[in-house]
Image (cartoon, rainbow, N blue to C red; front, side, top):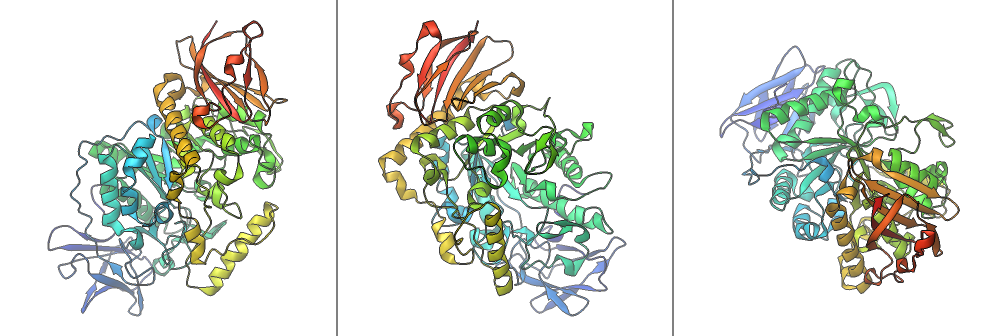
Amino acid sequence: MDIRTRTTGINFINNKTTTINIWAPQAEKIEVQCGKFTISLNKDDFGNWTGFTDLIKAGDLYWVIIDGHKRIPDPASLGQPEGVHGPSSAIDLHYEWTDDSWQNPSLRDYIFYELHTGTYTADGNFQGIINQLDYLVELGITAIEIMPVAAFPGERNWGYDGVFPYAVQWSYGGAAGLQQLVDKCHQKGLAVVLDVVYNHLGPEGNYLTEFGPYFTDKYKTPWGAAVNYDDRYSDGVRKFVIENVLMWFRDFHVDALRLDAVHAIKDFSAIHILQDIRRETDRLIKQTGRMHYLIAESDLNDPRYISGLSENGLGMHAQWTDEFHHALRVSAGEPKTGYYSDFMGIEHLAKAYRDAYVYTGMYSSERARKFGRETTGHPGSQFIVFSQNHDQTGNRMLGSRSGTLYSYEMQKLLAGAVMLSPFLPMLFMGEEYGETNPFLYFVSHTDSELVENVRSGRKQEFAAMHLEGEAPDPQDPVTMQQSRLNWSLLKEKHHQVMLLFYQAIIALHKRHAQIHSDEKELTRCTALKELNCLLLERSTTGSSELIFCLMNFSVEIQQISIPVNIKLAGVIFNSAAQIWGGPGDLSAARQPEHQQISIQPESFIVYQANYV
């Protein structure tokens, strides 16, 4: 595979010549129609239809004609200006980059900020994000994570219904808009993570089956037939996906990809598609000298996904860790319904701090089987944790955020629990100032039957969570409008204080080596079940110094006994301090002779300390 340039679809190799490459192994004839011109292509032994022309110019609209009568968009289209059912746009990906000096930070230095382009600002596009970059830098963020931008039906969608993996959503600003955003991020010192979906495609506008066996009936996924990674003709499908990965890295300078729900990728090939993706990514890194990361979303608690290729692992650099979130939420008072029913709160949160996964081979009642494997040997920088994200917010019937679910003090405690962990922290847009607008599920399909299926599917999902009432209509434009961030909240004092609190806890994370460390094996965490409190110890190799943290998830003042082998040196952060809008600092009420500390409800205290 040529990693130097994009080969699939229509590409410009100079000012005059355009190459065309369309994979359609079972077609008898493939043509490209552009204006008054029709260009016939030639087929090779692997089902690739290729040609050269000087008739297509950048910006031209074109169709692919299959067997003389099917006129449909290009599956490798780079732009769909008239929507997913309209013609494709021939786009020249050349861009005058200004980020030659940019170096992708070490993954352990990432502080993620997940955002949805359409709801992050009133503009609802890439320019809107650009306008907020200084704000994110001041907050302390080091990487923005953008929810999927592959072209989807209409203008309202989370992005997981994308049907043109190579085409950047036109209403967001298209390919050039995304390139400009990445360039501006690098100028500001921000890395860019892009969410991509290789386990399924959306239902509306999905024309891939017209071109070849992109899907297989061998397996089923929650979204229908699985992408064909190991059945007949799968070589062409794998190439299509791998080239997409390389395009984001090479042509858009994206720093990392977050691969959605890799547990739904079915592949029993001798070489798994994720391994192939990692190998080709490594080849690109070696050629360009630019580092890129692959981040998986997986709910299998299987460290093979983040193990190296030399260990026959699947080669992902890191993964999202939902179980930390679930244990944290139950500790904070989340009802134990649905997938929360498996979590014991404070005890499981302590285990998550130590092991990243909660279930590492124990019996899971919700799954009705033993589940998971230990993560020994994997550093904390391979796990991304959060107190909320698009899924955990949008999967609630009313899209409720922490800003409406929890008290002001508990919101700060949730943030502290994430930022003080040995893992990579991620924020969800707006949480840093206590956003109260919901983040609801929304779509803009044109097929009435599909719309009704989406509505009924949401109802079934909420039934599993034992929720009552009617969910907002995903198809109604108001649903998306309600999900936009309300930046005017920052005019209110307590939201301003929350933002300052987040800036301070992020700075604390960066400033202290023990907190910033990803030495997971040196993290010690003790659950005080009766008090609903945690004792967290963070240290580094070869040092007797540590960061000692008390977390009180209860609604009462608690007296906490300090381990006899720890000598406290002084408070460096207290979420209950009045400066953070809290009820006041009780840590001065320490009783040294009994090694006891008083801690306010729903708060945390961070100490510098030493082992003795």
